[in-house]
Image 1 (cartoon, rainbow, N blue to C red):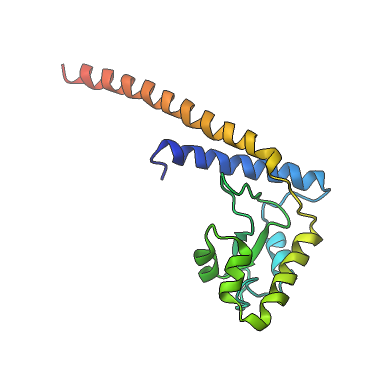
Image 2: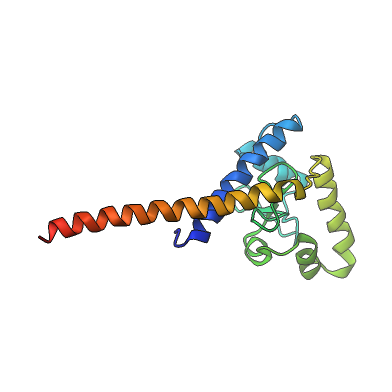
Length: 171
């Protein structure tokens, strides 16, 4: 539930990053990552029906989708091919906003870390996910601030209207 100016701004930023992801996919001549059942299957197949982090067996029904680069104001990851990987519930919950390499090293035995990291990097390369987010930072920051200000202005306006209606009802 949206409770504050920052919640509203964060939600708008996520929508923006989803839509930028669509543009980015299409510019790479890829079908937009929505994800559909077949798209989920494709990323799951790439990782051999395992969580990309801990290698737990997962299926379409038990799979969670994690953004390697989080979809937030700081990281500016996109909902796009090459940034969305299959993982188990536990890893999806525990990774949260952490860098995927840092998280991977915390759940991988040292002997397997390099192979798992290489597999994820291969996935990213396969879909050519090489986004320079520095070019998006100013746009995203402006959107974040604009949405917050506009939403607060509209909320204040509607609160005045609600107060007027309540005052009329109580007379």
